[in-house]
Length: 334
Image (cartoon, rainbow, N blue to C red; front, side, top):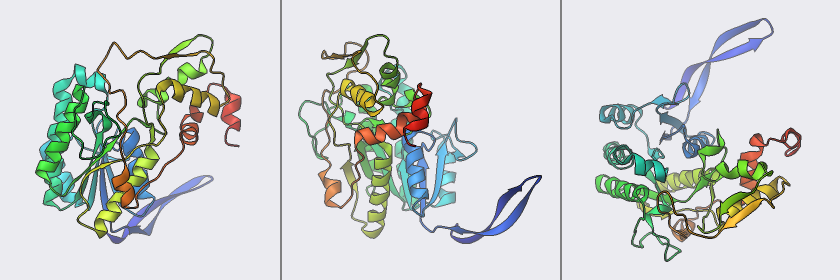
């Protein structure tokens, strides 16, 4: 759907409301965002929508009413969605991204991260849509950073292996697709445990007892708004230059452990941090994690694509609604 169409707008006045027909401008660039109900997907959908793209998002359990409800494991449903919408671009954000959940539910994770991704790539190729498959820094073992796009992957855990297999499935089924590897994400979460970054904020706020924080794994927390902007810039560059394809990296540029992230959160809101205790030993439970899987992002920069939000700025925007001190909630941005 492009051009001008008739739409309905609801008008409210005290004591009455009515519908009024009006012309609606439908942008001519179409993008489909999978996983649009998730942390990254919401940001990607919003970024394209606010930059004059006709954006359609799909999700599953939380899709309605804003997004299309589609089970990505249902090949027929995916076919009908893509054939019906005819997108120019597909940003494939949907994934099982929690390493410990992948370990406990390997078959389900593989179906979503690998099988569904390969099928989406095949459908994208049929309508000549530019597919961007969102992958992870966990395809690397973290022993020799920073990693370029052509460095040999060696994932330490099953999550990293499923995402690497997903990359292969995408590129085998669609030679013109792109893979975008990104690290740990944070942003405007619906609940604190939606991000492995924001989930530590409760330990920062409840400072009446000491809290152990990992000070071993080196991370590069990345704001979802920045990733969304990079996805849009990449899509728009590709529409001008069809040779843009293959594997790309994007990442925040500040190296922080979970302990250092927690202290930055405390500093952002003038909270005490003396109760935070750095733990320098490697983790002994859960899925293995790479110590430092820093990504080299120079390929995107050479295309003129980048956006970086300082961690303290992004984390303040993300966390202020979750402050338990109501005085801060009223004064942080006012």
